[in-house]
Image (cartoon, rainbow, N blue to C red; front, top):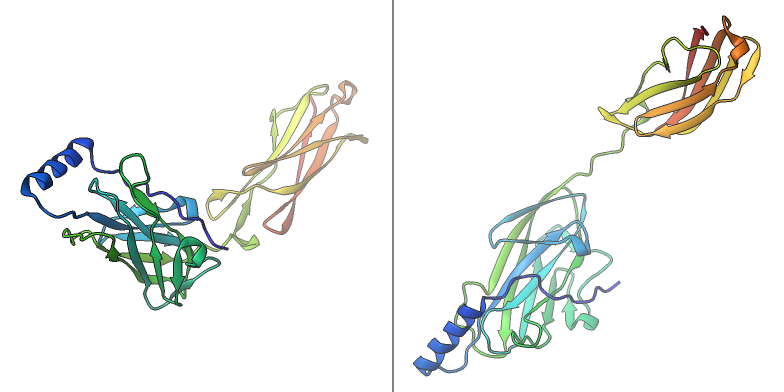
Length: 275
């Protein structure tokens, strides 16, 4: 699927700077020239890319990420530019790649695109693209973007190329059932009374972090009378709420909380004498 080109988020030069450049150019009687800057944005999604300084490094988690060139017009003269975006070995296009709908052509490792007219006054001064990229394996990869043609001469060449390194790290595997730590059932209040509401709860974690259970079910008895429990799943807990009868004073409250964590089923039992 092709992604629509989007406006650059780069800030344009301030009005004072633009005015100064215009005055200097006019005073010198120099021919028309432009200054166009290119940058590379990298991120986990099409809308989540962020600029990486030329020579800088970005870190992404997972083999799939998004990146692309961003072009910005610095000087006040309108202009257009053609850019080339290169992938290093081990990278390939994902579900999206440079295509004619974006004024682009592509090879397996290169995209060449042309901007729409850039006009700092009353128009669009920036233009950019973002495509899904897939890394062969975790590691470091280089992205290169370059302005290869402009509608007018661009004597400022220092910002016509950008090269960044993307460090691709592995996605942390999801916790397995063996990693789940499930505690014992606890009652609140700890010494329940007949005719009161009693909550039984069980805490659980996986990999040191709370994990939400599913399929919480409750059973309970006060003496021989069955109690209806209301089950609830929370982040790191399973609870069952019971309403005990007043006539159950002195009898044993017994019950069980059953639930599933990371695909594994657990049951925790509890008992207490009703005061």
